[in-house]
Amino acid sequence: MRGNPWGESVRLWSVVEVVAVAVGGMGNGEWGEAMLDRGLRRVINPYLDSVAGLVQRCGCSANQVSFLGFLVGIGGCVLIASGHVRLGLVLLLFNRLADGLDGMIARRVAATGAQSVRGHDVVGSDCGGFLDIVLDLLFYAAVPLSFGLLDRERNLLPATVLLFSFFGTSGSFLAYAIVKAKRGGGQRSECGGKSFFYSVGLMEGSETVMFFAAFCLWPERFAVLAWVFAGLCMLTTLQRILAGLREFR
Image (cartoon, rainbow, N blue to C red; front, top):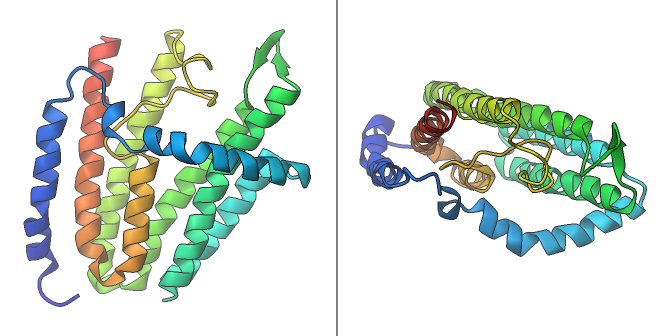
């Protein structure tokens, strides 16, 4: 990328300022409607469920799909770091597909033969949910790292700041879920069949995939995109902090 990335970041920072205004108007906790995840899930879940059924009939478990998706995603990051960015994007998208399929498979298994914990039927697997979030966080961290290694002179600083912002989003996400569960909330009926309560925020899964795809399609613009993404992630962390202070006081 020619020119001063800092200058271009400042020009694009207006995007973050617009979003900040929107965040200021989201004080009632109804943030989910502003996010992409819920709408996209309604559209793609029927298709994912069909694919999950096919994968299940082939004898693959949800945890196997999680591990396979993680390994493929890390392979994509290796390709990106070595300069094969477009091919890396294909593997990153496969990882995200697997991330959707593993939960679908777990819920299909539970629907046909409900698992039981101390006499109470549950949907999905606590072990699978634990594995899914750990592998997801490792994968998310590997993507900025791969671009930092691709061009250390231009990308290493914005990649590091983006990783810092990921600590904020993931930490606030998990802390919110832990306290919610401790207070008796976040039951599976509230979680949409997931293993724990998912607090909504400005940057969720769909937005993250869009930024990762943009990194790969315009790798010369990674620095600018990473600064913007990091700013939005920090706003997401602020959202969850404010939500937690309001709900848990």
